[in-house]
Length: 367
Image (cartoon, rainbow, N blue to C red; front, side, top):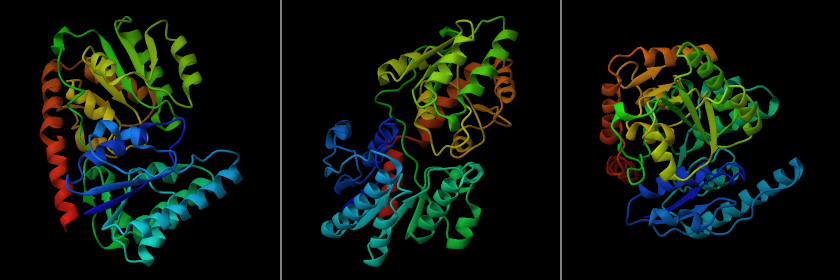
């Protein structure tokens, strides 16, 4: 089978698409050929997948708004031509809500297509401004016109009921695996420090500032026993650093660090937090749970498919700093946190191994 993956241009300040694409590549059938078409990507970025993959060089998009828009149109046309020349059996649109022209070409030439929805509809609908409204309309149109749709978790599918009603079908649920090569339970839970961990891009939709404020409320009640570790970077870095500085030394912003360092920090943490307003199936949540760190999460996307309230974690009622503080208090008052830790590990190992995800993908592609 010849598979082409089409994706949006790689943002210069956000390399997380490389991680998710690497995982997608690893669960594709071992006997297929893979070509990735996306501006700013290279074959070296996927060397850890141990899979042969062709990544034609496409220029990064830079310059002013008009320049970027014109370059994007040109790259989309080029990708469409590459699809026609390669004659694939199927085209997978992954993080590809801007790739309108390639999907049109697939439809015109009857090349089978699959479009992944990786975003929360309520969040996207809430975004102000004409540009965001157009982006939502384009995403819904692409999802409607693709031959098939897929999501990473049932929780994501539940965010888009009107789309499935219009399509008169339901999406395939194809989760991405948690990488057990780099993340695992190593340190006994009760031997860990009083650490709270966040692994996230520092961006407004990730709600990091409310996490810091909610943690401060909680920690004051706990007589400053706890420490918050923030791993990540992004456009809100300066605001996050400013908020962290006001926490009296109880918040550390690490920036992006290696997988080995993240694994070590997780294995010395007692709880993980994501207060994000939109998610698909976050790798950071899976990795934390693999390390035996129970999670406090917001009820969005795939997070509510992994975390069951008061069984293997805690689900917040909302997104405010008070909601975060309430979640931390619920965690702190739980008398059997170690059981939550064991349940977290079991949840990921049983449902999100590379073997389980590969079997689901293979069955889907054979249909």
